[in-house]
Length: 478
Image 1 (cartoon, one colour):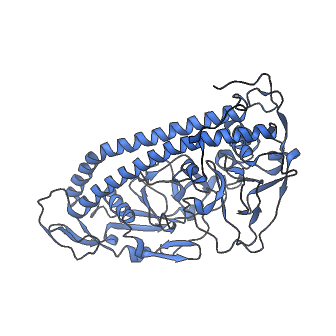
Image 2 (cartoon, rainbow, N blue to C red; image 1 turned 135 degrees about the horizontal axis):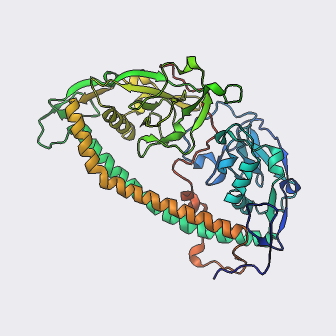
């Protein structure tokens, strides 16, 4: 049964609750120093920095951002180092590394004076608690919340809690056991979501190729991915469905001097591919000049097509609808698509393009350059399709909405349960890592035996290293 420590004291950091009286609390610079060790070959393990899982090998992540042509000169991180994504520390994108690898030169890397000062896993838990995130926000500087930067002097001045090493080890053992249990629940919910998504895909697959009526007269379409199609549907190409295709723009970093040019720039990282819309949790602001905005301002009904990025698990070519009630453009890794409303409803084109991606029909149109996938848009838009009339498209969209409603509700319920599990985990970590619960006498049970694989579900489906910024990847199609 959970118990408290015998005595507590008030910590120096205002966000923390009272902590066990015997725990040490000293500034980070007492334990760490900033280092700038660079890779000579760029061949070391590429590490990703996440707000959910800390510092992990990028090969274990579902990362959609591109890889650089060379990582010579990247910063080296060694086991026990703290790695901080300077730009996203306010979102807890940091952690203690357990790996030798390389990270972005823009990251902060801090090495312990004494490797025995901390159990790296204890520190990893501690640094991503809400109390410490609040401290990062308070000490970061920047012109707006989304552009805050936590610089070395500010980080090294933050007090760190240091229980005796044996207590750190026990805290880590306890939290990892609880994490494994939570991860199993999350995996079960994700598996359920995967089955529901596949059920939805099969439903969409049948309707976009065959229509709503099982008695519809079919004939060969002459298009491989479709096969037989309703005889009254009209053959077309994707290009017939698109009035405008315009590449986005990345602009420059926002500063006080270019304030008049500040504008939301939608990125691939903002795609909510389950709902085919834009997630609004971490929108990026860039400085985009008036001339750069011309022909690129987004409107309701526009679609955003990923033309550069992707990866083996999630190939390039994803698409979402623009539905934000604010002025925005899209990044240069995306294209703005304006549907040809004389031929297709915006939502029907969204359904069609998302289905082509989900069923990998897009695959032959992907070109792999050094470290990045590019969608050959011109070739892709020559792909054959068959189109119902606008009236039948409306009927299909209405019918699909009704048919998919229970599936969507079940997916939303499972996602809600995952969020609750994460909130519970966060609360439990905060209580144990700050000494509100004394786990020194806790002993693991046989089911508490865990492996690293058990913990992989703690990462999120879109748990990317969010600091990789769009710089290249233009396939030449505007």
